[in-house]
Image (cartoon, rainbow, N blue to C red):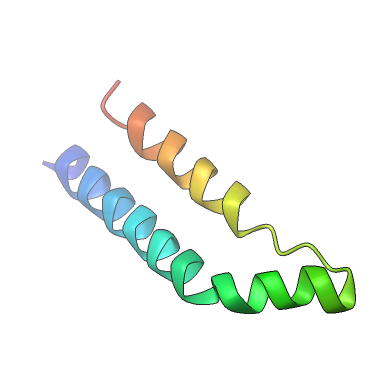
Length: 57
């Protein structure tokens, strides 16, 4: 039972990071071009996706 709750929570977290990444995309492009700052949202999305995929194992 707790495995299903954990998997659902990880899925929700992954979806939230995807939504945040999409909404912050214009700001990330601006930060990279104008300020020279990389925003590591892509790494965060990849990490949460990998954790979610490994939760079933």
